[in-house]
Length: 472
Image (cartoon, rainbow, N blue to C red; front, side, top):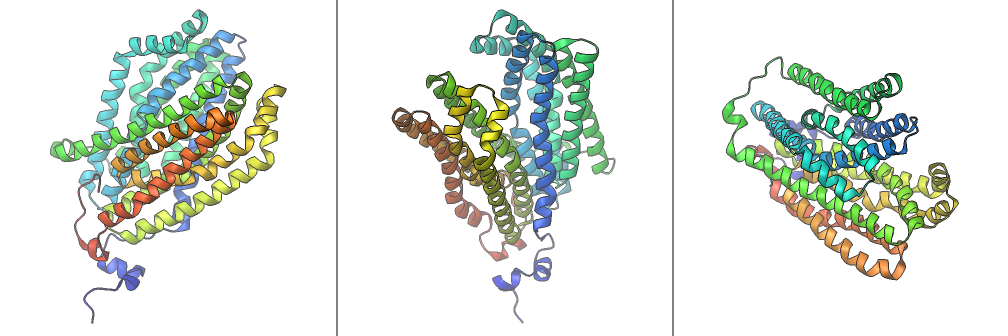
């Protein structure tokens, strides 16, 4: 009898379980069990923004509407900066789950919460220079600046709670509890909507009411999340101080967060450059681009669901030292990502003109948007690989490679923009954006085999102890 199964035999579930007790299978159903709830959760976020804008818009004061718009941009920047807390916690938790390491499972959450609280307090302490710098950069009028200040000075108090919610959400996603993640996000956004309507339309508190409703919502969900964590941990909060402050793992956590933060800033820079360049092409082109970018962002919310599934399964498989599950997770999430991206692109090609007419009544902007619509319709297909392999690399905490490939893609984008935009105008701008999205995906695929083989040198690697969490 053979001592070890062959690679073909190893793919059978019964052999996998015998060789590696932490082996697990990834199915279409399990992928959808994470992707669908998280897609719904991600889609609830822009709905909240629409409600906030609507309740303030009903007051009929343009300055208040401008104030909440500028304030939202400032907080989008702050929370995008620290969104790495959600992503890194998902990957690190999934790896601890796969390795069946309960000690690290707790410590991963506590480290993330500790970092979230510290970063949130720092933002509150620095609120004055952050607000002053943002208002100077935006160049808003005196009335809009006053409204923004009223909104910012209240909402900033909720920043520590918001960042703690990122850590808790990432932890539950790392455990594969997408339903819990949906519940937390859904209740948060629903609570914010209800409170904002009550405070603004019922009590007449104006823009301060929107800010206060958001703070109360974030604090409430942080408390609810803590209770759910307590139940998940069996009613035991305790974690060993040595595990929490383990220098190697704490450094790995900080490195992963740093790399994801750099990646997020690079992405923000691309969008900023796209908007700034569009403005130089005239107000009509700028307005058309603003309308069409909503299609790209909406597609991203849909694709993020499958990317989240990739994060959880990739991290868990790496922790379990189980290569078949890792590879199957990649195949299934990429497959469904392409199905969804293709469907979204087809819908935009067919019905995009109708959506444009709904979003703007300006005929000149409508006409321009239809001209550039095919470029926007291609963005889901151009970006699907980038979304999915971002999820894979985040789950495996291959953050250095992801960061580096993002920076290379950014350089490609700038180079193409310098060439294409002067020659093709706004068409060149959209061409550069699509090429940037495609480059991100292809570069990550290029690095994928090397990282995979380094993490799983051979079939028998599943019998070895799990490696320390971090970049493979």
